[in-house]
Length: 190
Image 1 (spheres, one colour):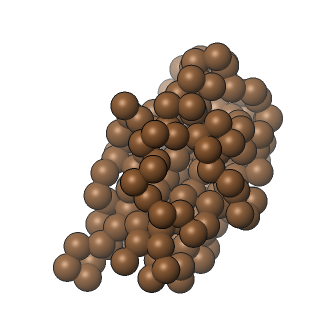
Image 2 (cartoon, helix red, strand yellow):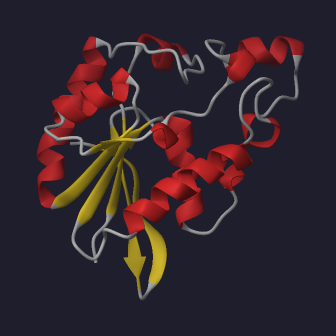
């Protein structure tokens, strides 16, 4: 049985600054490009029969620099829609809303954890149908992929809040004794 390999895009100026970035299309930094290129040798152990990517250029460029050919661009792999909090850091948001917690409260004008979970459930269901034939890569974003990890192991979407995910990392979803498990999480390429 194949595995689902989650790849978080390389660093951007906004990710480095801790800004919530969903629909804003920002470029990778030089460090982000380096992170993405470093993924390539680590990915040779898998036989990818499908590579799904978020439509955001930071994800698509990461896939390209990692040597992957995207077979499907899927809006469901887009980052959590932060609505009114787009481009703002948690510290900035908490100046006016001190107890705000993304995983519990969601974003005004954006999505809740449950809404993101429904999108990622669709992505995982599509990937799951291919695992008998090989491995599937999902190239996307920090919060959305954290939700994917939680949903894979039958936890609520909000449980993604305890799964840190850095830029330019590899996480692996698989099986053990017939159960869905997280085989690796937040691993640097090297």
